[in-house]
Length: 237
Image (cartoon, rainbow, N blue to C red; front, side):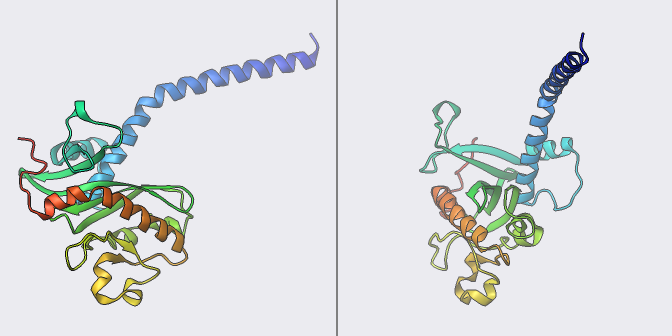
């Protein structure tokens, strides 16, 4: 057999063997990948609620235990009505509630917003008054490192804590990202609805502001329930 054919045959066999090994590895690790993704999702929800501290080292088992103990998941329609599994549709809204001592402390809204280069994914936690932001996390994005990518940094996310999604009259206005320092750019009476922007990332701030407003508007019927102090809302007993 000519050497050229031998080389071609060897390369073909090597490719087939490598493909089989990679496929087997991918299939075999799929369950681990799915579990890690689920744990990461739960971790970000716990961080948004403040149940898990920033920078705290915690095992996957502990994260899952904390999630089971404190977080309940709901699906609501566009009127804020809680839906049972059999009546859910594709356009319904996911909601997570932080329960402690059988009392609802806060709820989390998933943030899937347009960014400059792709989707921005995170969670926004709101206190049980339906108006005050408790925490914000970003777990996936495609923004430019060092610029728009700063949205995942601690200083930027901490900006949101204590801010309001309603104005001084209690009307929904969402939360907005200023072009630079909110203190320098925004009138004092409106600063409660603004966070500091990221230098050199104006477009990321613009897209995230628009995305958050669109998402929070969808969840406004939920927020209204809390602002009206409907104590039975989200209770399942």
